[in-house]
Image (tube, rainbow, N blue to C red; front, side, top):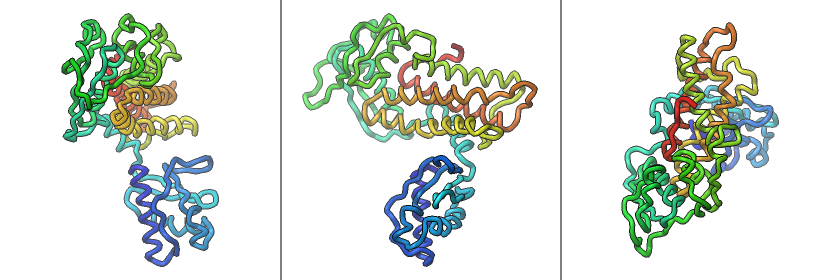
Length: 355
């Protein structure tokens, strides 16, 4: 159940309470559902009881106590807790730890893609400049993932080295129709080809189109300060975890037990991985809609950082035996690796299993 669906569920429960005479208040058009704050619990929380309490002539906690049993009976909700002055904390049944991870692993590199095609057509035209051509090539891949049929064109034929080294492709070249908007990202300050395909493409795609890209050796450095290294390293770690788990005699299993046996901080780290997996389709859609591959690149960095913070909890330590929780955490790490590989592929960048 997504936050939007959960918001509708809360409103439905309130309407039923009003219809039953348990509350006398105008039902708002929308309610906010978000992650619980300090002192909260469950998967989501809403302050709707505080929002309508004065109009209902009751305390927020009294309103929450009316809504709580109705919400608890809704499909997909496992439990309701009231905290603070009247916050409703919602625990989902079969939480995202199983459904989401199974979806990511099951769809593989197609997770977040739109099927079937939408029937939309797009033409991307760029000047004869290396960054513009790379951006158009990445957008072609991203838009295609969202069900759009794309044609990329350029003022002139791309330089042969751009095609050979950077693996770019355009459908045609020449003067575009006058009514066709030309994509004009800030040009690269120098030739990026010496960086090689992966680092050069990242250097040109990671900054926003209106920012001047840097094409220095920092993109080749194998250290944490290099975002490309972190993304590819996180993907390699996810694959290493699978190999190491096999050596210990267990495989992944997508269940909601990923947080079992974890301390609070570790459980929050697991939740952060789930959050970035949930947000990945929105990041893809946003990158396509705004013609901004940098949005996808930045989301991959966020995903990598979440996985690297969480990955130390996946394998058993010392004499600890593999448990269902370890299998669930491994599935979560594998799902994050799947998203990293799929996202890098859309940017035209490789995701090696060993780094």
